[in-house]
Image 1 (cartoon, one colour):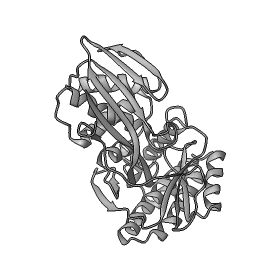
Image 2 (tube, rainbow, N blue to C red; image 1 turned 180 degrees about the vertical axis):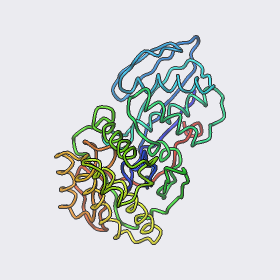
Image 3 (cartoon, helix red, strand yellow; image 1 turned 45 degrees about the horizontal axis):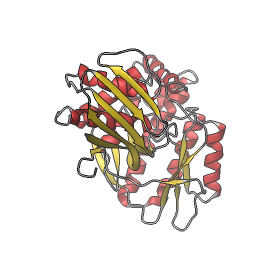
Image 4 (tube, one colour; image 1 turned 180 degrees about the horizontal axis):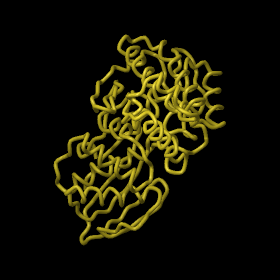
Length: 343
């Protein structure tokens, strides 16, 4: 049997920029998803999602539609085999302490943990992590129906303990940026509104960005200018304005972290949230209430995280403050890994 763990992630800043070939600043967190895999005779796969007590079983080559976590399991087996990595039939057990639908990327954590466990079970050497991120992204795009970029998978696979990951989504160049909290607290607060990428307006926002690129005759909004944005019709002008301003905020946040001046991060989080709310329009009343609760408790900055339309907010609290009671402290943790030495 083999076991693999993949963390969730929090995107410190840089939302909806990944599929626009922009800049992001995520970090892996300590919570995540663990997948255990043991070989079975024959060609049949069995899977158990332990936290909800749901089961699935399917034969190799079965491409029938599936929903929820089952789509990820079936899609991962199919995509690994399509890439030439034949995996043995297996019994899979999925466990985790990462809330689903909260904007902490439980889907990417599940994809990566499945991939690492199945590859190890097959005796395959681990793939290049950027290649593996692309494979996991195909599972999310083609099997789960969410037209996401590579942000989540790369954060899960390349994160570093005590660091945020500055990611250029055009070149895929990365930089480990120290995230030294020194008494400051980063917390997430669940808004209570569960979101789903595929069922929300996420795919609509991505399509609007494509339309903006077509009108501006650019490959991505990374190539657009502020002057270009002014020529776009609404709401495309607002969508593009968010992307451009958010890229600037990522650069500013990375500079703040390098200097160790966390007080400068709060206003950037607030500005990011205002842009996501007003220009990208991905907030909902429950999220606004969660942001307000954090600010009332003394947060120096707070913003929606993840794809939007629900999920969690991220807030930064100065030393000595008390976040809301239901807030979850998050710290930058290590990347996805096999657990054979721990289990």
